[in-house]
Image (tube, rainbow, N blue to C red; front, top):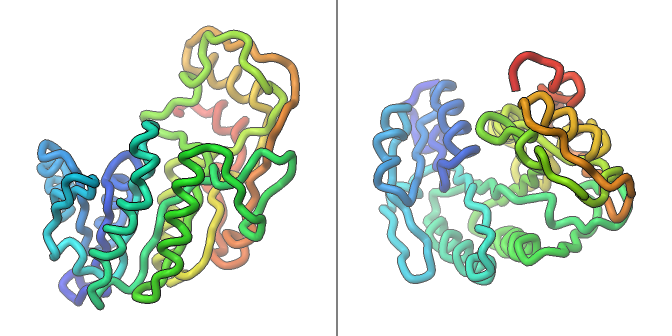
Length: 280
């Protein structure tokens, strides 16, 4: 692939954080021209060192600033989940609306919106992409509204990619509950995805031009919360957590679209095997 070919080989990643930066490096290694954004001036050099064209971009309600060149790409990946603060969740839809307006430039053809399986409620069932979302948290509600907003726009085709719980380098699951006690719902199934598969599924969408769909992204293995996190804590050399041996509300995230449309096979599809490997 010729990096100088055209905008069709150019991808802009809005939010080069834990996932976005890893994806940007992978795309760059596959000879895509990658534009990456950060809100931190200190990170610009880090992006540039990785061969990523760096941009300082901000879509805070009181400070919208970006260079139009950032949106001169065929595909825009929006990877900026709402922060935990209530104020951020309340203004998240406005932020996504501003981004959609900036992307309305006759150049952006496709958007991949990094969403979350938090849009599904814990209703004691297996959920797929055909399950109607019913978020219980303010964050989940903000994300679902943003999904709908982007899907309603006619200027570009939007793909929704709903990630389950994220683990991988820098996100050691052993530290989530290590040493804690009386943790509720110990018998509930886990829904997790490794960073490698986050990147792998995104790449599959791009290379197969699989735009305009909704994808759940979650490893197909769902051991009990108390089993997985106890093993993970011991693996990390931490005191084992103590769970309440109970099953309250739960859900299992499944995907109909990932195997059928993307033909994707998870790199990490068994958490027990993963924890017994030498390296987390």
